Amino acid sequence: MKETDLYPAVKALLEDQGYEVKSEVGAADVVALRSGEDDPLIVELKTGFSLTLFHQAIARQALTDAVYIAVARAPGKRWQKALVANTKLCRRLGLGLILVRLSDGHVEVKLDPAPYTPRKSKPRSARLLREFARRVGDPNTGGAARRGTLVTAYRQDAQRLASHLRAHGPSKGSDVAKATGVPHATRMMRDDHYGWFDRTNTKGVYKLSPRGAEETSETELSARIEG
Image (cartoon, rainbow, N blue to C red; front, top):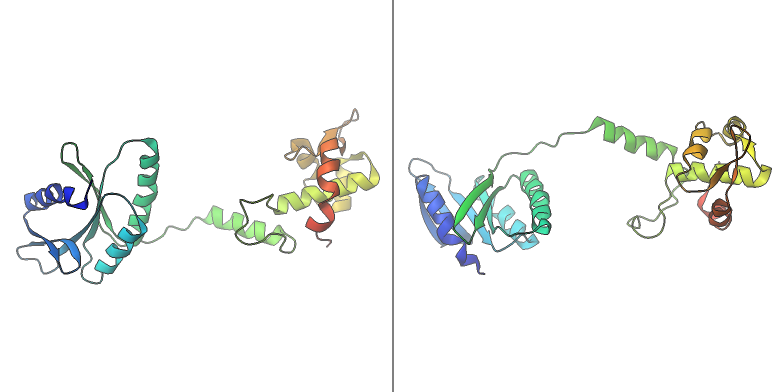
């Protein structure tokens, strides 16, 4: 597959819309101009999505707002997933997106260029700020989220609960909450997200599980920050 394989289908699409189309004009792969319009339409051709393609398209925005990227459509779920992500990127960059099916020359204009204004998510922003406020200190290393265990405010709270149970033995949830300052101690021990807590035969009383004793014994002092 070559980039030139995309050109006939893209040229035919633009000519059907009344454009005069020429290739390799200056640095642009495809330039189209319609009678009565001053601004050209530019298309950058690539056999697939790449960072280079986006760099080229962004550079063309210095010439016109009507900049498209055109890529060959491919089969498979992996390509479809890439299409979703790259469509979002095109939208954010104000680029248009054209898909070309080389088997029959079918062309789909997936996205037209348009100014992009991000929509803020107040709930997500609020969750971010709550996590920042609740987390004690800075226990993680930036960029290390996929390596090892990420220390969140929730995990720090769980470590406090485990530390209390280790020191005091089986305890009532309300007493643990009061002693540790973790208001949802009972619910956290009941949900047992990390497998650190076990229920006892007494209602509302929890103890440290064998897994909890093993996983927090070596890490709690280094990962938990005394407040």
